[in-house]
Image (tube, rainbow, N blue to C red; front, side):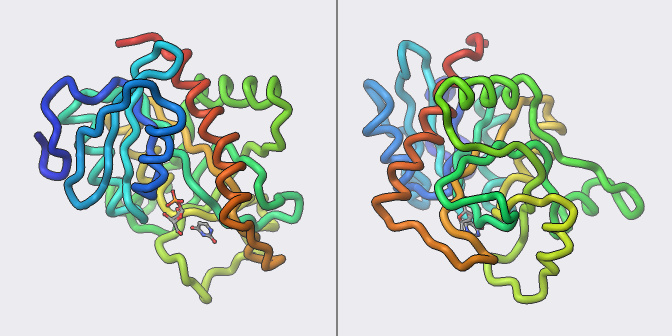
Length: 238
Ligand SMILES: O=P(O)(O)O[C@H]1O[C@H](CO)[C@@H](O)[C@H]1O
Ligand SMILES: O=c1cc[nH]c(=O)[nH]1
């Protein structure tokens, strides 16, 4: 086991989906994976391993925010040898073309978190970016499935409630939406030479004040989850 995951070596697949919400992990395991076995309940951060169309895949809840996802990504890669990590999260829309229920493929992750500064030191603004192979595959599958999706820059912010953030400036610079984990995922994937992609569903719009219903969120989650599993299925087993 690792410090926060109570699973034996080999219990976790080389490809892992990463929802923030443990109940989303359970939902994915119960509705999309075959023969799913729960390998972790520590802190209720549920983790499952099963198969999707014959491909062994795990799903691990990360909790909310950069400190929490950093723990799981570190342990999945360093203690369990995970090579590919695909976040399946929700986001608050910011750009005017972004609508609730749209899917966003996070190409680059801007942040107000100190994680980049603390890694590289003052004066170096490392750009946390998606793995191109995963991003291209996801875009191809989204095109084939006629999904409404965007590819671009997303803010990964430290605070959910953040009145001080100058959102209009970020929107003017093309930032599509906000969420709270991707900078850490992309930074740690770069550090450990793993592959990572964040796929997000827009659950609300911060500027227009729109929200989705719980039922609608579930349906649009299904598009995102299907897309993530479609990408995961194509990764050769390592
Ligand atoms: O839906 P998840 O994956 O938790 O992601 C988003 O939702 C949480 C905030 O409600 C933050 O974790 C944010 O990144
Ligand atoms: O971080 C998040 C996630 C979803 N919606 C938001 O407004 N913020």
